[in-house]
Image 1 (cartoon, helix red, strand yellow):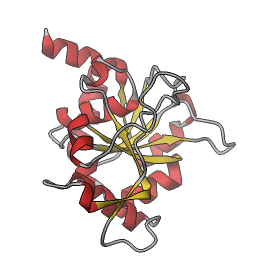
Image 2 (cartoon, helix red, strand yellow; image 1 turned 45 degrees about the vertical axis):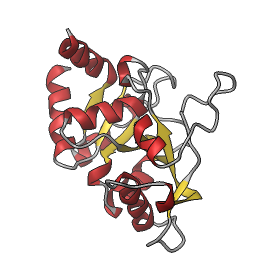
Image 3 (cartoon, helix red, strand yellow; image 1 turned 90 degrees about the vertical axis):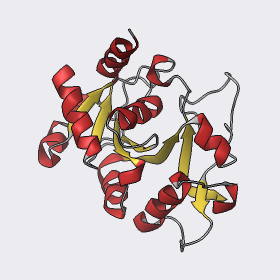
Length: 203
């Protein structure tokens, strides 16, 4: 798994989409992931086409505070497994907000240096997730993994993720997407391997 993780990190650093597997909080759901700084309309379209789940922007608590975002449900009761903030749209430069180009623009606006609450409107078509400060070592889920992977790849500290749904509408598992991985040469980053890497760094 170490070699696979290195391959995934190289892909992330090069601006490519990878698959995150091993989410321990969502029953094995898998996600497409791209570092937010590399997101393009083509990336958003790929996620909408091949992921089909909700396209989310994973951000650090610091970035969330900078944008004036807070958890919709900060308690522990009735949680969905995703740490959602309110949905957002870029305050300027979008039309309907839902197109791949508009969503990519919203992501770029939200992660820009110096971005603030004045730069976004709500509700919108991009769904922020606020990661735990300790990353996967605090919460072993795709949101935190995406940010840790982006950091390790030297690609910033925000990421766009999208859960993957099968043709029959059920959520996919890693064994369901062999054809997708092969067709698009997607690297796979397993959260367990990522945790082991980060624990080794801290040791």
